[in-house]
Amino acid sequence: MRKSTLKHKHLRKVLYEVMTLGDDAPLEAYVRLFEEFKHSSLIIAGNFGEDLMDMSTVKTEIGVFGMLFTDMDEFNKVFPDYGVGSKEHFFTTYVDFLKKTDLSGYILNFKSEGFIMPRDLMDSFKDLPDFNFPTDDAYNSKELKNLKDSINNEKLESFIKDPKNIAKYDELFEVMSSSTLLTLMLSKDDLSDNAEDGIISSSKDNPVGFLYIDHLGGEYATVYTSEEKMTAINTPFKKYSQIVNPAHMVMFVLNEDMDGLIINPGNEQILLTRETLLDYSEVIEKTCNNPKLNKAMLCMFLMEV
Image (cartoon, rainbow, N blue to C red; front, top):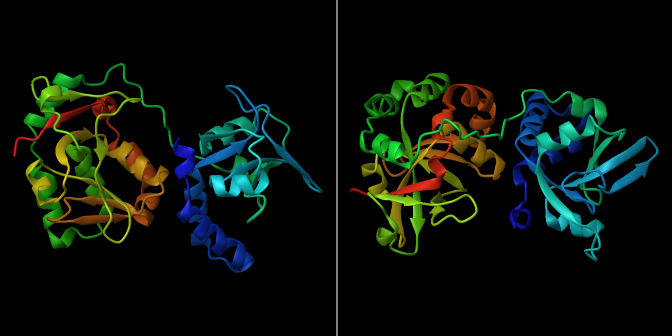
């Protein structure tokens, strides 16, 4: 279960800075903290069904607060006997839920930071990420394969090769929005026999491959302008390509607490840090989101290089 792997190292780092410096904390730290919260998935305590109505709370002198946790270690400090259930939800869920209750807000990591998020603070969160990815009008697997076979990212490749374009992120994301980007999927097995016309079908609950993560100096997702660019990656696993919705990939990086995104690692190797992705997250969601690619994660392709 994913909640067992949640850590929120980036959120806790900036939270520590804000709580330690107090009124002396720079505005940039508060902005970064808001962005980290917006892209987080926190753990809730309680014995509940499909909703959050039976969440565990703590009563303080200033009101009753719902209990949230960054990870299961913090959860177990409060509930060591596993007598209380736990669930993971996007932060947006907690913002919406608070509007339906008379809670005073939430308290994060009760036994550690004990960071109180009162109702007025929760109400101030705007432009929250939309994790609803409708698939009604999305490309099917054959259409995605045709898109992959006709890929042409010369404009993006020329842009990232030009040193004058370093740090021109608005322009970069604009060019990316009109590009077809790939990511590298891996499997310990040869999936050739599973392929039909070069397409390997998967499902949300039963993936047949896993995402390649670059661990050089951190955890970075990777995207590529062509399958040829993937040949620079050395791995003992079998390689497969997959088309990505760039906006969804950035959401994934931020929500999974990763350090950033690399375009064409081992080649041009354009590194987009987590800080950059947070700063431009709204721009990326509006500019690079292509709903036609919302089924792309359900199929991989045999490599043709």
